[in-house]
Amino acid sequence: MLRIAVPNKGSLSGPAADMLHEAGYQQRRESKELRIVDPVNEVEFFYLRPRDIAIYVASGQLDIGITGRDLLIDSGADAEEILPLGFARSTFRFATKPGTVGGDLADLKGKTIATSYEGIVAKYLADHGIDASVVHLDGAVETAIQLGVAQVIADVVETGTSLRNAGLEVVGEPIMKSEAAVIRRTGAEPDDPKVQQFLRRLQGVLVARTYVMMDYDCRVEQLEKAVALTPGLESPTVSPLHNEGWVAVRAMVPAREAQRIMDDLYDIGARAILTTAIHACRL
Image (cartoon, rainbow, N blue to C red; front, side, top):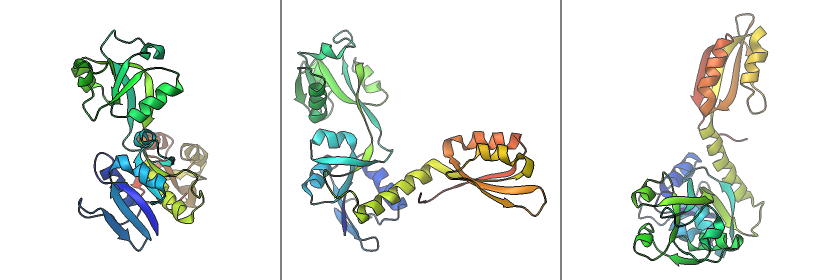
């Protein structure tokens, strides 16, 4: 039975549970449940603190887990990312009072940096040969500068509103960009069939969320132009219609481009253009 770690709370928990449900896996009904077994799919889920998941997976007690890339790196655990999941995206950056630090990384030398992600910051500084002190704080690191604990902070930045409200500005390039990901122990068997089946299911969900199925009718003489607009993944399905000279076409198209493609198809004479959601797929 495949043993999988899943976030039990926070911004990772809900989207992870939704994705697993879409992939056909049973999920817990109450937030207090810490473990459930899905006998049909031969999977056992353990609901853990997101920060702890990489450590459990690295220990070998659990086969794989879902957590944030930032939490994986920050943990320093002997685990690796094997599939990005596209949700819980964030950017990790330095910030300080205007005029304190320039745009060059070298300006961080000798500074004290406050952060909740000590592992990420320490690794980044070491990789870039910067000698600076790192102070670990849990949450609300913006106040560290105001209270004189540090000259610089390193934290997740989304809109930057909270930083501006604290009188701070972002400096330098992003330290890293994070998102949810499936992880496994470094050196684990890469071709484990149970893990590969799990990854295929999640990849199917990702594709289903990214694409829609488009159907339309067009004249035979316009087919080449239409197919150029909707090439599909391998090629579109084309079927003759009862009315001579017309064909029906079906193809997967990127969801974010669907409206533009529909406009372009209509302009070349296609009609009865429909899109439908894809709930699951295998590629």
